[in-house]
Length: 403
Image (cartoon, rainbow, N blue to C red):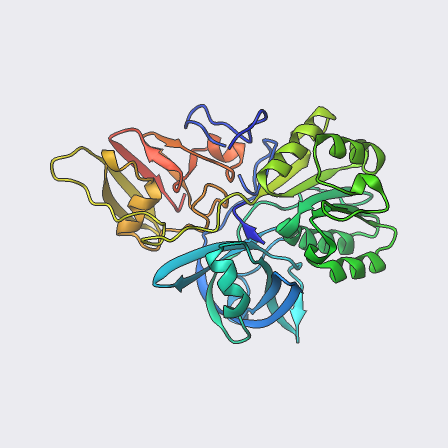
């Protein structure tokens, strides 16, 4: 699953102080988000590759004991992979599909699922380029697409996923069902056909293990199911029918939505209409395309301030070291693009306003964020911005990646 997790009638989020903001992994509510740690890359070796469908694979990475703390994670989080293809740096983010306690031969592993996208540079390469023994840079786990339930006794959790959106829900379902004998998990999973269903055997095995506590509803848009409501594309009418007949919202304690923007936005709007509170809905979007041919790591042309033109002064702190860069006003570049010229180690993954890896605290000055699918409301209130989407509007700004 490639995580990349345009507003409609019900916008995702808006910031009046920082400009229009529209997240991948986010909660609809204002509850304070879990703390984020600094994203760091380490070289890990692929330990195993397993086919999931004709177009998808599960890739596992061995975690050496000395890096165990760096790669501890919560179910629902993701990692970013970094490599060089055709001379250009490429980064892609993928959700972890197994719970943290997963081991292979007694050793800790990280497992992700990669589905090949049409025209996808990285996902196409990964099908043959990621084999046992391949070393690749893997970022420490990030993300807030995690359960916020304080008590699992008798809890009912529902996941709605499309395609590779199943990936984080696999980790969540496995973890929640194993954690408490009275927790229930319902999965509504939509695909075009049975052959496209990722983790089909794993889901069947999980159903056999928890026959009364796991409910699976497969919706196939191009195959006829015996239950008519589970056939065809999920639109508003079908979703309302499914909720009324199969998943009454009043019985659900927490919702996880994962997939393309139209499906996630539809689910959020319908759930809100049915009285589901924003605090109980968490969502993750896959919206950023699989990156066109780029000229540098961000797909931007190198920019240098013109001696005779106006520029913005950007001061940044990263790992305790302060740096200064000037950004030409007419270049309209983001804070991240400018920062990378003086700090190539500035953190980022999707560069589409989705994953939240590039977040920093705005100490002085003002910016406008073009998109925001990553920051929680409380983070925005505390001054955090996504540097990949933030454009300075004052002559001087100061950002702190360590804050």
